[in-house]
Length: 556
Image 1: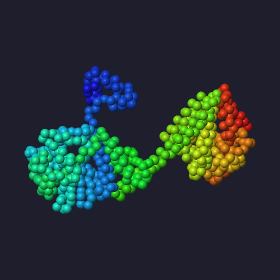
Image 2: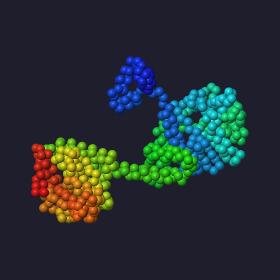
Image 3: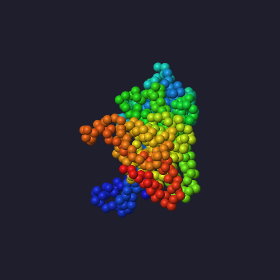
Image 4: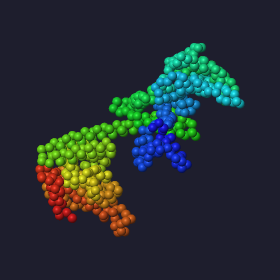
């Protein structure tokens, strides 16, 4: 389409409202791309259609680039090159140390290079006229003019040392009449300007203020244009197309400052850089308090402390995720190996691989934590030091048995399972089934009475929210690593909570601790043996269902 979608729609609405005839070609476009279409389809078409202007996006990328340059100067401040950084006041960026002040303008373009006569590059030197009383007066409103006129704030006669920098994302390509290479090489802000310099000639023309009164730089700033231009530096930074490299560079510089002494195993990411930009942007929004625009070391050190903590937390998370997935992979491989020679190994293998994917997703996307899983598996709480006491061999054997029992339940229920959102014992819940299977593993094998005592302690120490949750759901608790031959059936268990808590819905003579948590104790050792027996049966699911029913015989 030659015309933009916007123009098409505008004309369609105009003619529709005026009940005028609609161009058949345009009505066809409306019918094809918009009428009776879903929002996603319309959005996709709009994205692919020609747009009339992209000024908004260009402006946003320019602001983002300016904040990156601000962070670059903040890094220099942290390196003791500057005492302060000021944002969006007097100029885009102002930095200072002692009596030295540098004014910085940031300019961007989607292009990598522009001839100095092209827009917007020509704004560097090009001035415009203003009509006053029907007469034209040349204004000092080029980019360089605006930079140099900051010298009125910090005059050389008042012992200020000023520098002027135009920080550009693109290269200024010289032409026959204009060559600014002299200024791109003025990194030290002290290069003499010759009398035939092109920029000097342009800026030496007569200029007038808003009232039409002629003025000179010498009269306003106390210095000649030649003297001021000597301290003008035209700096070319990273292009917008290479903004990722600019981001990486700033991250590297900040890493050296934030994590000095931490080694090389932790670093900030672009998301942390954007967090800093968010802070800077917020500081710029309060027009009632100009002091917020001043960034000092004290301010930024506090901000970087937050960034450091976030990065260390993220690094710890990544380490924990890596450790968790490593353990899971080893245990899953061992589980696959343990079932490989059985009749029903192919059926079980597919379930094991599916469960492995779930576990990886649980760790990477749902905040799953292997350390916390072990703590709750053994102690029913995360307020424990059990994880540090467990040997690698014990950890892997514990997970192997846990995963074996979970796969067994998955086969018997023929449902997908997930970790429940409860707080105490590790529990699994199956789709469309209002019951949970919790797991308790003993660090040292014990008899059933000691198991029950252990369970009572865990539940009584759980939060009220957890206790109420367990009261209202069909609770099955599978015991692992016990030493009791008599424990070979599913047995009922009542657990009374410790505190006497009044609940409005209960009768006056009832207390919460008089309403027990009803559970079933399941013998994990027997269930594990049944699982391996089922691997040789004709119908593995039917066999396991029957075995669970047999284990439950006599339970009320």
